[in-house]
Length: 379
Image (cartoon, rainbow, N blue to C red):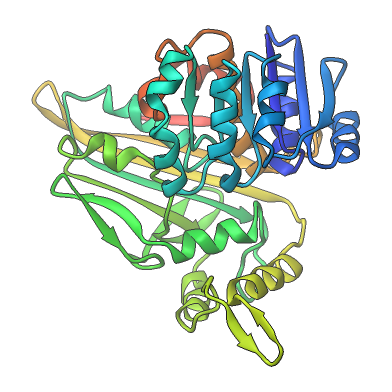
């Protein structure tokens, strides 16, 4: 099979690295608006299965022509390009997945469900870590119960050694971080969807070998789960994990408007505060020090007339041999697995589908573990 990866940034190179070493994949095409970057990335992280080329992700016609040659494609560019790339994939009769990150964009993609069905392809948005892998683990957990009362999802990417004052380093993109901390969050309460403010609901938690941490509401991580399980599950929420004190320090900066996308006049220049804030974070929180990813999903419900719980837990640390960070591994590898499953015919549904419905959790978990991601399931 042939799989295209669009975008040669951190996540694109990790996805290409994985797919180029996956059974059954004969060719991985790595495409970027900077063709030389794609070539360099392929030379460092790829192998003889990888080819490269230039693609402007905004050029839907060019994307359509390229994707005609592939069985499936994975978008690793920013979410604003995903509606156009989804259209290109459908027109090219190529299955498609992306890293997502914006629920409005996902809704736009879901509106193409009928067209994707007619093209005999599957489109699965919002793959990756969270949104992404956690949705498939939730589906696995729900299937273990007769009825589910509560789903609590806690995920975070952190430096292995915290550095004051924020005890954080940028591990994916400052734009994505601001978006998570700024946009409203969707939870389920009494089986109904409800909006809560980001950076609220602060709680303390602890991981063995890591220590004490905190978690608070952020947007996007639950993806389509509140829609899928509304009316079926009483309570569902998603919180981001950080070192203690991070929320108290970061939240005031957003409360005074540093995350606002609304342009502000400063002297002779008009600029959105968010753009300045993003540049400051990228410059001052990009330490490139070893990172780790933590995940804990706690699902409670009834099975055979007994109340019980199942806990999914991951502690993943940067891989010094491959040079891939923990965030690259736990984001790009799950997305690559879903794309491979689509290309290999392991996903039978067609149309635009959330992954908690489309993806076989058992096969997905097996593939995760083959990649050295240490998922522990405690019942």
